[in-house]
Length: 172
Image (cartoon, rainbow, N blue to C red; front, side, top):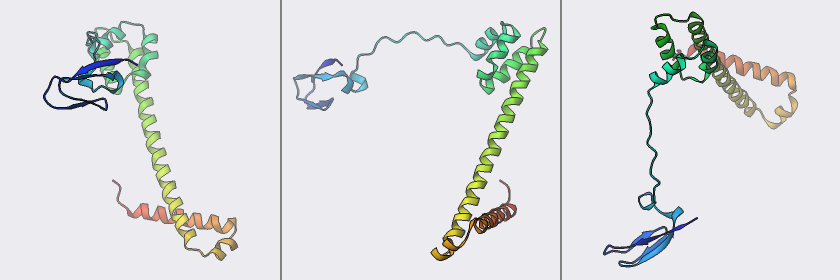
């Protein structure tokens, strides 16, 4: 944790890092408290921009097995572009195109499964809410008197009512 000497060369009082600096004076300020415009910046390394196409063309220079290992790490866009680039070569490798297609199918199935799981979780939440609402409608004596069979029947009735509501609600 270092400090930096900040001098006020203006005509008005300034506040830096929680300290007041009157005109013509200066203060040592903890560098962690300095605003961005007063922090010393290390010279930025020159960034080399490499396009996605260039990266994928480099990847296509590898063997099919080496490429197949990297397919799960690619974005959807990169995967589609990789298939397009390989398809446009003079001798497209059918095994690589098959591996790309298999990865695309796996991802589509995963998305479908996630959507189904989310839909099921939402359905279960609606059933649970309807069940709890039914339980709230009972008196304390009624709650004590019902057994597991009656609770199961209430839950089944709640599920039935949610299914009926879903059937009458138009799909989005």
